[in-house]
Image (cartoon, rainbow over all chains, first blue to last red; front, side, top):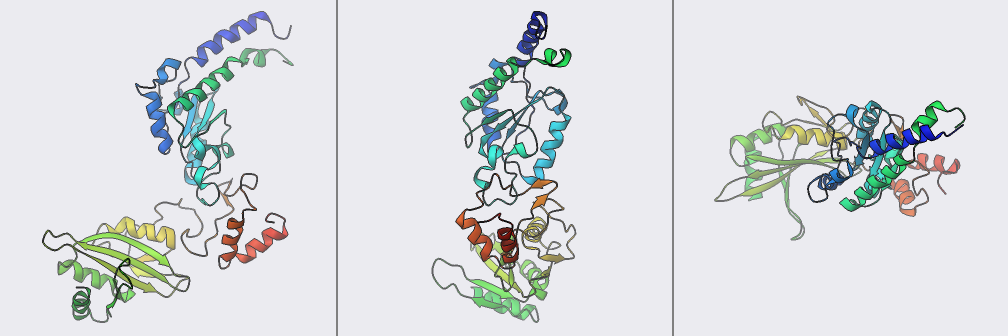
Length: 160
Length: 195
């Protein structure tokens, strides 16, 4: 039995817990970080979706919101922070700069052309900077993605 | 006012050779040129005589044939505030160097480091002569006219071809205009990277 009813149910339960307590890392790079702070603050209140607890260390975080321009100097640090996070971990690329280089795309010698050059990205949020609603939609897209994961099955059932 | 100041500088610092360049129109600013080797003495005179008590900015300019370092001094005075554009010309464009004025104006510390970072101007006797914005192991000086960004930094491609519009006319024209970049552009073209 490849995808048993027990494992599926336990998976659903785990996913429900994980997706409703996504803890992001306190990590802002540029102006997008201001919108991220606004999203976390009272008016837009990211806590409604269980991800308002911004952790001050990558080791306690589930999710990294790359909010802002990733320069080549910073990209080394972004990669290191990502590697310090515990599995399972997710990355939201927020704003045009983190997605593709933004206004520095063609002539910026100092900007990484998209954070996906150094870390795997789960959700891209377009905008310059994205409004808080956009970031919330990105978070909810990530929650949908998490809800459909099958961690136990992938780990215990062969040829899943 | 600038003429008086230039005369004062010439009287106080031997060999400073201060000359006034008047602005060609109302939009431009007049400036004073001095000899690069005497900049420390000139700055010391400006400070000790009280004619300029604040250093506002130091920047560099690349004129392709030579380089200039521009010092913007100011006098903060309620009665008669004034400003001075002091320029030195550096003819050695390969390794331009000029004395630091950090010991006189502490504000010069970061400004000179930025000038070094962007233009490669060496400031002799600077107490902390490092890059300030670019990474320490960055190659080249980005605001020089002949600057070409390195292809790879720390394992990361600076201009990934799949993501860049390499056929962009402006991009190619700019690269071709750069002196010394033509070989790189032609080698790229022969490899089929640039159409």
